[in-house]
Length: 116
Image 1 (cartoon, helix red, strand yellow):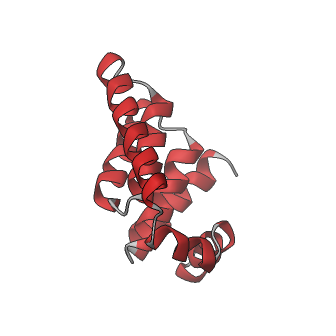
Image 2: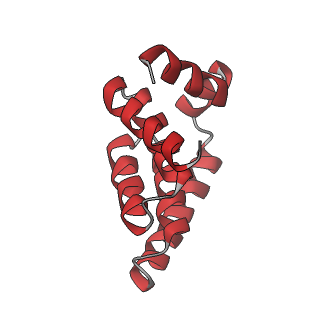
């Protein structure tokens, strides 16, 4: 996949207005996400192999602009299931938003390999 192709893939998944909304999170939404993170941490304490908890944690961390932590969560999800399309895709989106285009392309390529 080319860098242009990766950018088109990400751009079709989130509009610029959605991206702008994420920059200025409503305090109530931020509190809700932080509460969800605590619940995910508790679920992962009980079952460190909870794939869904890892993915939701990654997504929530990305929403809070904690991208490096989000990537770690997606990597944990991938360790649980190497064939999980969502974990690869959202890892790619997060990497792309960090301007790590080459790493994003690798994640998107893996997502395509998992589910052509």
